[in-house]
Length: 329
Image (cartoon, rainbow, N blue to C red):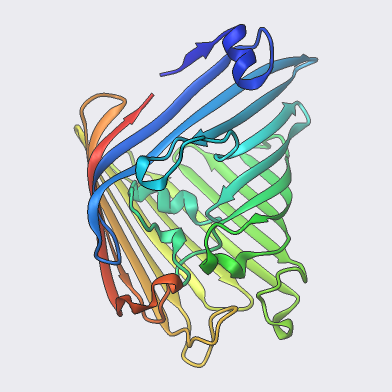
């Protein structure tokens, strides 16, 4: 559901008189058990998003999107800041689309992982062994018009500040080419990343560094199935398989990550032997309405080399869960 904020309200929020701003958001509260064994009520997500669209004429339009995380009392957040969620300006038309954005990146495997539909204190992309680089970035993107379901996006992104310390191996600048095909029930994407010398956590001997990612999602009607593979030139590869199954008011989700790091290869930016690691997550959601649901999320990490590096004392295998009430507006 969208609401409009008109005239003075819009001016107060985004400084644009007579603008119509669409407001959406999500919030959830429930009981959580994290990877450290801590239990308690958790405000898992409370984010508000603002979107404004302007007709520029001649078939072109501009879309502004921004947002903020409201946070919870446990986080000590008293003054939410605009832009703490993704912020972008996009101009689109017959030429395609140009976007300037500041955003949190989960990496190219994110669309496949999203089928799991989980909400957890530590997600797949917060882990070192199974992630593809969760960081805050600034970037410029150009996407071509669709040609028979095929689009291409060229981007250049720079680091906007680390999301977590264990993501330091994702720092630096990156040029990417993404080619997507989407038609009917099938969506396929290939991404090539060129990582420049400012990728400071990559050993000099591994430069120039590149990465290749291939993902596919197919909607069978009774279920959506996804698969992805990410392989950088400087470390092992990550594979993910996922499925999302609606059953009446219930929706079941599952994703399994596997990181293959042969013995003797060291994690980027660390002196830790890599070995293998895995992360498996699942969810069960019951829809109370179109916008409100009860959801239980579970995950198990095989921490073969302390993948969540900030918590090295937690052992070789740990589980987490979150059960809560979720609402979108």
